[in-house]
Amino acid sequence: MTFGSLLLFCMGLTAVVSVGVGSLGIYAFTRNRVPGRPLRRIVRNPRLWGLGLLFQVASLLTYSWILLAMGLVVTVCGHALKPTG
Image (cartoon, rainbow, N blue to C red; front, top):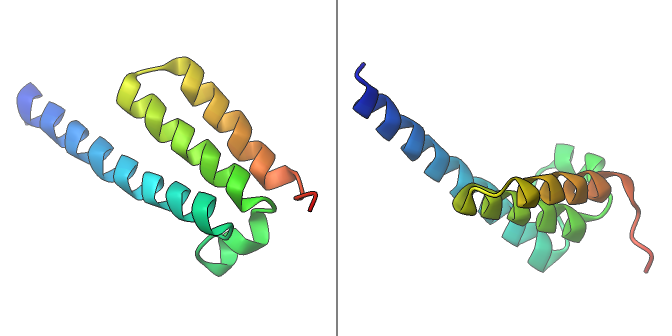
């Protein structure tokens, strides 16, 4: 494999992962639930979890470490914090 083909493979893989994670984040943020039984048992606050995923996808698109760190913190808070309403 040459460097160019490896670079194209990594770019394609990044695009596929960002579309998949972004769609999960949009679904969780707008509908306030997550798909699949395992995620429903783990995630306590789906909107917060979805917002964290969207921050992580935005960090991939803008090459920002700050957005990645914010996304990770918000996603972990979505796992740990119960909704207050």
